[in-house]
Amino acid sequence: MTLQLYRLTNTDIVTLQEEEADLRQKIAELAAIIGDERTMYNVMKRELRDIKKTFGNARRSELQAQAVTIEIDTASLIVEEETFVSVTRGGYIKRTSLRSFNASTIDEIGKRDDDELIFYAQTKTTQHLLMFTTLGNVIYRPVHELTDIRWKDIGEHLSQTITNFATDEEVLYAEIVDTFETGTYFAVTKLGQIKRVERKEFTPWRTYKSKSVKYAKIKDDSDSIIAVSPILMDDVLLVTHNGYALRFNIEEVPVVGAKAAGVKAINLKDGDVVQAAFIANTKSFYILTQRGSVKRTAIDDIPLAKRAGRGLQVLRELKSKPHRIFMAGPVFAENSGAELDLFATEPVKSEEQILLVTSKTGDTKEINLSDLGISERTSNGSFISDTISDQEVFAAKIK
Image (cartoon, rainbow, N blue to C red):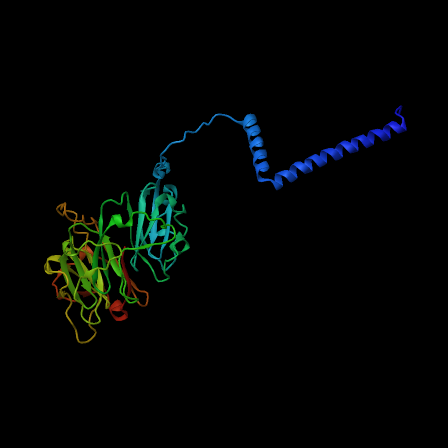
């Protein structure tokens, strides 16, 4: 080092003095900004001008007096694919790829032992699924939002997403729709009420992913919906537990809102309930009693009447072990040559219609309904078998 000691000491003092002066000036400036609002605003303006000068560029967006809303059609974003949709009575739903479905049989569907497949159909992911329950609720799902699950695996239960799905609630009817603009349904309750409601009432609502909406009202816990179906200008046939049947045209039932109550469909006796209700667009209908007796009766044997009447007896009353109706419905197998009616719902065409009956001890019996002869209106029919007659019917369904 060639610098002498006195010069080094002198240099350090000068540097410290300059640093002190800078700090005092900085403190004064900051104190002025904090203490005087006008000074603070002037500093802000000066700094913003510097930023604008350094980073500023021309506005690229355009300011307009009126904002334009941009609407995106989400339906156009859905990839259209073929798929199978299935719904069980217990409320399990899913969609399945064609590959998985074709590699299995219908009976191999994944479900609980005590559950029943009530609907399956080949659909597109751009379509919509509506499900109507026994407690008067309707549930909506876009097909593309259904979970893709193998045919042999159990589906997703509605209670996993629908917060108001009750433990005793079941799916009564399901269908695939393309649009909500057209279509009308009828619904009948166990205690004898009926209503019509338009499909547009079920246009997808905001909370459809977590809540169902009402399509019909029930009176109390003893009541439930026993039938719901699309309908045009058809006749409706109601059959009661004690053996009365009433047929009237659906035009007698007003079209009301989804939350509105229905009107009286049939004049029930004390203790009687509606056991079945269906569109009377076939030539005959069947009746199964709790004692295992079955018969087929001509629709024309129940003449067209007015709504809210008592109806006619379709069973002969017995003093000992009287017959009570367990199940009833239309016979479709005879309709392959039926004439086309543009104002009525087209009946299902089927080569055979098998009724599977299970007794209380587990015995089963199959009956082809089209093989049954036409019985007179007040006949009690014929017993399926002596064993089921003694044990009584536990369950029955159309295969």
